[in-house]
Amino acid sequence: MNPTQREITTPSPLLDAHGRLTQVGWVRAALLDCNLEHVAFYPRPLRFLQRFRVKRWDYYGVTTPDRFFSATLADLGYAGQAFVYTVDFATGQHHEETLTIPLARGIALPRNSTAGESVYDDGRMRLRFQAVPGERRLSVAWPNFGGQPLTAEITLRLAPDHESTVVVIPIRGNRFYYNRKVNCLPAAGWLQIGDRRTEITPETCLGNLDWGRGVWEYRSFWVWASASGFLPDGRTVGLNLGFGFGDTSAATENTLILAGRIHKLGQVDFTYDRNDFKRPWRMVSPDGRLDLTFEPFLERVAATNLLVITSEVHQMFGRYRGTAVADDGEQIAIEGLIGFAEEHRAKW
Image 1 (cartoon, rainbow, N blue to C red):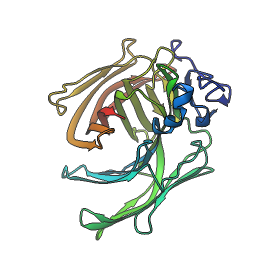
Image 2: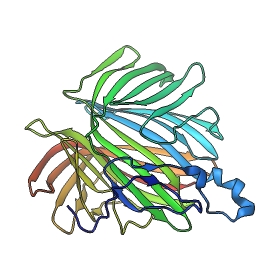
Image 3: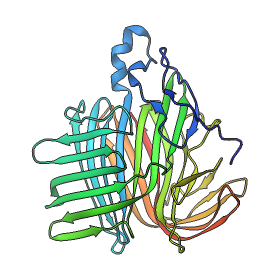
Image 4: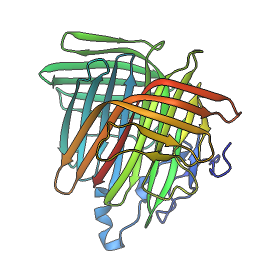
């Protein structure tokens, strides 16, 4: 256990009546009620503008032995986005489709990450994510995905004792970030693009969730690194690492996930080349618990320019190699674990 990281163990509302965070730190499960109706950071005469500053998203990814598939629904206040992308590890080919929706009309996202439905359905295109006890069900239909129809029906198993990386991070002036990330979810189902069908089986395929809610500074920056895979002994192993916005003195989002259990890490120092993201990245903790090299083999760039909202993401897919130390002192050798690392700069 890392003594510099403040663990939250008591359920509570996320915000008090004045829009302040009731607790700050990290959590192994989604204990806090995301009561965004109490958001308060503008002076009272301007409170009607706050809805445009609240950001909400549900991002799912699935890693198979030869590809990565992701689907997202986001409400950014001024606009909503639905997007889907796939990455072929062998060929390096990737494709993405994004639909931008003024004022996020038609996008429904649940209050909390523990239950409910996230959906956008215009009669032709459909993204539906259902959170039910023990499972996450993903249903996607995108009629024109690079000229071919894409459909997916995937179930991610989320056992009651499977732990999450949850952080509550304050940002200046009653702004905040409330985020739940879950790695290494056994995945079952299928993905079909045109005539090509990929069967998804839990013995080889794992899913991850990034569920974010909050109010950021208009100009924001962050780095996120993630992986879900298997060790030679059959145990699942995951990484969730990052830095950027907000005050992380009480808790970072850095974790090793081993067989569904969180092993909390403190500070992790990133070294990478912004002029050449394809060069190897280094991720090292000063306390010696993490020493990783990330070797990219593919770069995905996603850029949005909607005047008031701009975003640029450099997401690198590659392989992690190195060591991580669990809470009990076990040294975990990581060799060739496929995952991603990204830098994101936004005005939103």
